[in-house]
Length: 541
View (cartoon, rainbow, N blue to C red):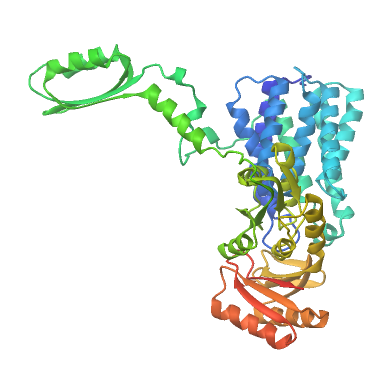
């Protein structure tokens, strides 16, 4: 039984956990109860922890403190969705406790797990039980108790897992929605998968995963190696016309003594050579003994590498110098919605929303591009708010997150934005504006389900009013009519309908006409939002 771990062990544990969550990604997604196409807990957790795995693979023989820090930093920036942010916070706490340590026994590991739980609970405004928070908290408590009995880290990890399984099973009873669906919490399950994979690593067992280092990339990262790593400076290529009977194999043997990466192709008329060498002159002097040069090309690879790295560094996002006091960044999906926000004065938009939550790094880069001292962020999705809240600590700019949960809320908030006002005034005004608009959404059922008395079948249309399920039908016109009647009964005066990428304009116009007929006292506007997933986003004020 393993007693302690070092940095290499921790790296292996986290890489193992990333592989395991990746394998279970879809299963975790499918645990999401609400049948809308937003089952992305597994995807968010996988992308978050794999950011750490990728950086850890590049870290050669890290000590314990460095391995923990590398993982925490990568996960902080790569965190996506609430589940991904909480996962990153658990590892941030672990890193905090392991700072300065070279070895970790059972007692220290239990303390690190508890530090992670404390960090996660501290960051969540209203911690809900029956979630990953509950599972991690009870697992850490069990680890602490076990460490008093046996200081071996493997024993402590086993105890944490045993309690995590019990806690996960009980999430069904702690959350009424989970209980009705008969499933456990997806985030809690993800944390259990991570703990179990880390135990396998302690026992010397690896979870198979595709190696990111061998995966095909769109372009190479030339900053991964140093100029000093280039042994031979000159890439030398030439073609010689065959003019005598000298044996090309003698040339091959000679060039092999001058460098590496040698390729020599010989046919009846020419000899073609590629070689990396520090002495291209000597190579050419020997080669001319075989005939006349047809072509010659010599390139300094050290210079090329330096220029490439400098070019890529120049392309790296810079932090824009402040030219004004206030700016705004908004998350949205669809060209139409993007134009709406830009026309309202948003400085930058981030593509994202349901099923495609941007990472903390994505939001950070957008914020840094805004030439303002203080940048307001409109997440426009409840699952992006926590990722946005991590940005302030990563930039010299002041970041204020307005907790908009829908695009209509974000639009309404922007109508209240005053670029000449103070940070405090705008924070209050934008936040207050969120409560003045009702949001309706029509999407489709991603799976069969039974929610709030609705017998939902995969592929049915779903209507949401606010965050609640409003209705389901095989006919989208039935839902539009019901929503219009509710808007009329609520006495709303301004209605804006954003139709999605999968809706034809003529059908959208019929939807707008229906609202206008049912709500004759209201001002109805129709806009092409171009958003995916949601056929209609409707705001009513």
